Length: 115
Image 1: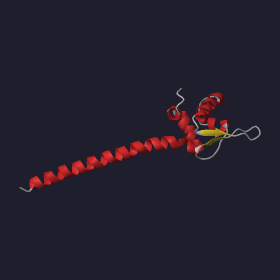
Image 2: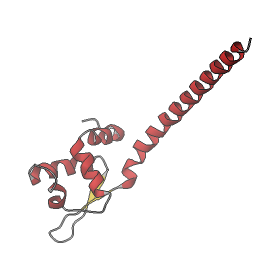
Image 3: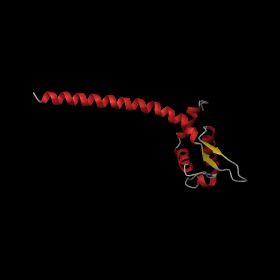
Image 4: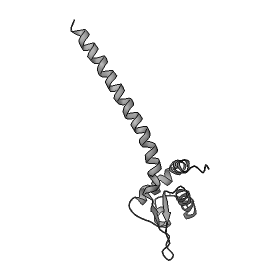
C-alpha cells in the first residue's frame, strides 16, 4: 500500500465494512466485540479492519484494563475533506457556468420567438 496519507485514507474507505465501522464509531467508542456484532466475520477479521483504519489515521485505539475501545479520529478525515472541497468548488463553478449558458440560450430563444 502507498505511504501517501491521502491514498491510505481512501484505501481504508474503499471497503464497505470499514465505512460501516466508521459510521458506528460516530455514535461513540466501541470494543471489537461491539463492532463485530452486525457482521458475519470473526473478531480477528474485524481487528484487521480496525488496524487498517488506525494506520490510515481514521480511528485510534485506547487501553482501559482488558478493554481496547476504538474511537473515531475526526481530524483523520481533514485531508479527505480538503481534497474533496477543492473539487466541490470546481463542480460548483462548472454548474454555475452551465446554468449561465442555459439561461443565455433560453433568453436568446425567447427573444427570437417574439419576432
